[in-house]
Image 1 (spheres, helix red, strand yellow):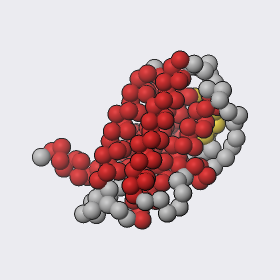
Image 2: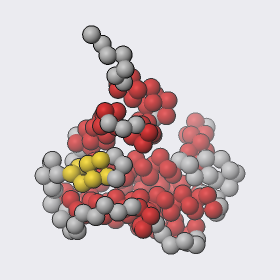
Image 3: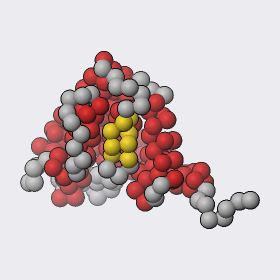
Length: 203
């Protein structure tokens, strides 16, 4: 007998992913849902794809993602909204790096928040653009370190909202998070940069 109250996890994920894309769908569902659906999303959108990749593969994906990040940051208008968004991306990535360092045995786990990792208030657009590139280069370096000193496959480090993630899951999360958030950056025309990218690609 079917329990009508039980959520159709697969259907919920498919609808969300079809509507906003795999990475965005994962973030959206994981933030808004608890329990079964969140676990399903983390497993199928973060951990399983990451698990099929080597640390070298993930490092290369982060490098490619960094190219898009740099380009979008360079094309972003100098507005408070864009500066705040870049500071958010940098802060989350630095925060995630601290959790990856736990997997590398370089620091003890501390359940802190990301705010302490954000760049200083009042940072200029140019400073944030430079910090963004430096921060992504640091994440790529951590992926390389993981290649040479991989933790056990079942070693996990907690994400405050998503729960325990493997080192590979963390790398995939950081790449996806930065990509999703950077799509919100706006050009001097006030248009989201990812829309301008799509228009340029189709022309």
